[in-house]
Image (tube, rainbow, N blue to C red; front, side):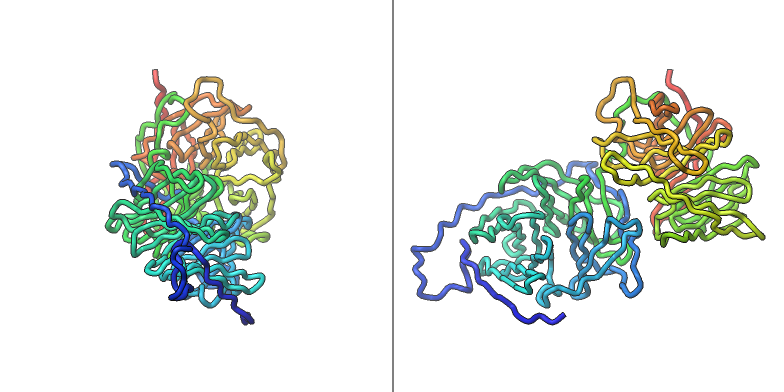
Amino acid sequence: MKFQKTLLACAVSVFLAGCSSDDDDSSKDPIVPEPTSLKLVVPAEGKSMVEDFPLAMYVTYPEGEQKASAITSIDVNWPFVDVFQSSVEYGYIDGDSDELFYHSVENIHDGAKNATDLERQDDILWYVTGDNILNRYNRAQDELVTWQVSEDSVFTELAIDEEGEEQVWLYDQSAHQLVIFNAVDESSQVIALEGDMSVEGLAVSEDNYLILAKEATQGVVLHYSLADTNLTYADSWYIEGFGAAQFNDIGLMPDGRIAVSNDDTENNLVFVMDKMAQIGVGPIEDSGELEKVAEHALEEVVVQPSGIWALADDSWMIITDQAEMFAMDANFKVTEKVNIEFDSINCNQGCTEAIVGRDNEFFAMTDGGLIGHFTKTDNSYTLAKEYQINVKDGEGESYSYSGLGYDVSAQEYYLVPDQNDEETIDELIILNSDFTLKERYDITYSGETEGSIFEYDAQGVQYHQGNVYVLSEKFTKLIKLNLVGEIVAVYDLDHEDVSDPSDIALKDGQVYVLGDHENDEPVPPLSVFDIVEHD
């Protein structure tokens, strides 16, 4: 669109600069408060964040949209994640859509197109361009307001909460300091930064404040608690596992997950998590452990496996994040490959999560609870029918799923929603053969705990001999439930054996654990374990 007018407003701030005249009465200048300081704390040894979810790999681009391959900044405005590519494009990812659709945005001021950082509040865009100017553009009214905050500053990063204009956080690269600008009364506060780390991104959400920094070439996440404009150090972590990628911005999701962007052309927007929290001991004392007894190499064509099923004739089926099903013989050699296509959705990267197989047919489940029934006719599989699992949580929202169990004799399916909230009650869901709801039970535990039992997640779900087994990626545990949702045992899975478990199968008294991987990593082997009970 063409912009018909531009409103330029120079603010009177405590760093009054280019808008003042030579004959201003300096005695009327506001008092500049003494700057405070903030230490950029180097993470302790072993403190690191690793990939939790590669969001960029799951985004769907509608026809006419170009792939976001040069991300320079991000802003979480849930359910949208705004994505900015300086000198290229501004757009957003729709977190409410199952396909995670990306949409570009044309209504952006010309001056913002080369911004070094950009944040949004509804129709308001705040941005900086590497000089001493803070810009505020109202897209609805087509109005630009600028503040020359200081004479020598070089603002490269900014952050602002979803509401209010009293705290616009700026990073002044030239002075290595934070500037808090109040756009209402046009006052400012300076916080000098102590430490040699460079600042690459800022994020603020209520009482949480995040700094993305870089020490030498390694990314660092620093977390501070925020009260008014006072920052108190909470924790810090190195970012590991991303090779030579350089991180350039940070955001905080509503559920507490941290999003970071980097300069990679593919895996450039990811959620990260505390590595030690992921592989900690968990809230329930272990009843036993999984002892690795064998492993089976998978062929390289089996990329990012997400679900596994053992058939009665000793053959196997594996489903992948690429919406593919691989039929395998007893030695895990591929005998057939099937491309999975649904009628009702465009199944993008990471859509397919679990599989239940039978002779000449299989059921594929998406993370949104869509079931595709595929049958084999004339040596090829085709979609016979679709089912939608219609089970809502307490807020009336649909669950997401990563695993599906099945009792062959009772013809019942078992689900545990894959949630990321330790305060939200998890459920065991039992479905009839037509995927309608039969029963649902809150998951419980009668013993003592160290924390919430709902910290566990549910990457894999399998029924076996009267119990439901749940694979938790967090803490790497195998959890045994009875059929009314009570946890009866927890078994430890060594993180070194399978670092990124994605599904399980139980066969002949042994546990087969499938591992996931990223695009630039080799396909991990299928690991086989015995369950060893503790005395």
